[in-house]
Amino acid sequence: MQIKTLKIEGYEEVIEGRDSTCGLHAYIAVHSTRKGPSLGGIRMASYTSPDQALEDVLRLAKAMTYKAAAFNMNLGGGKAVIIGNPEKDKRGCLFRAMGRMINQLDGRYYAAKDAGVVTEDLIEVAQETRFVTGLPALMGGSDDPSPATAMGIFYGMRACLREKFGSDSFKDIVVAIQGLGHVGFALASLLKAEKAQLIITDTNETLIKKAQEQFDAEVVSPDKIYSVSCDIFSPCALGGAINDTTINQLNCRIVAGGANNQLVVPEKHGKLLMEKDILYAPDYVLNAGGLMNIYVKDILKEKDVDRMLEKIETQLEAIFTKAKKSNLPPGQVANEMTDANLSQKV
Image (cartoon, rainbow, N blue to C red; front, side):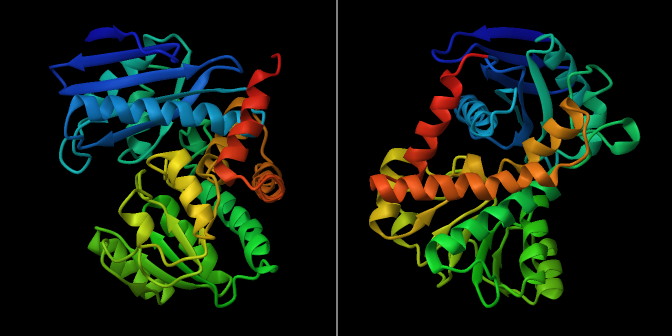
């Protein structure tokens, strides 16, 4: 295992790890441990270059700091990314090597699950380090955080509906879901139970067919999801859904989804959404349910996650109220409120 330390302004610690015997090439970014140990998922993706992977891990780690601070959790922000195709390149030794890399940070970073990584991969990681969360309940862990993430988004969408339409009923509300991974599929199930109308897209045909049959959902191609007429556009795939091209295609009233870093340029695109009269639910507030699940069960060793998930709804209400009074984008208001939390003495 070769470990290289990278000096990145604004980050406490960033390391690059390589293990040629297992094919590991990974980055771990620790953005902040001011409030507590950094915590964030391991993502595995087919990055086009190491620079792209590094950029992703830095953005994601900072987002985790804000996600924890938005709800005053005693955690910092960190993230790990593995360069590789999660459909082809997975091996047990790859994730065991990842565990050894995590162990190098001696508890300053706690790992969890993210895109391209499943619980079985975390079990391999746990063979080499104790600094891993989200393990199966039978192993004493908090289990898959995806249902909690989806439930938190559902609660947050209720706040969005009240703000935009004066009612939090999902009956006949049209929701366009981009991405049917663990979070997107669970969210679709919750929305269908409340009689929402679903439009879905994904690159995985098996998931599309399953969702179409189970939820009676309309299917569109990935490039058409932005322009469909809907009440809520819900990005639940990877980040960067809202960019200079897609923002002009949007035909929705609300953007509220589970993906991290949805706005490519947050200041610019947040303002443009407001000018288009599209309500934006700041992603790191809306999708904090998975982190809450880990925090309550793995860190606090408690069980009542739902009570904390409900804070997503009330926090968004506060953000929307302040945004309306100050005529500022909700994302900017969320950042200001979270920065105030971060500035408080520990």
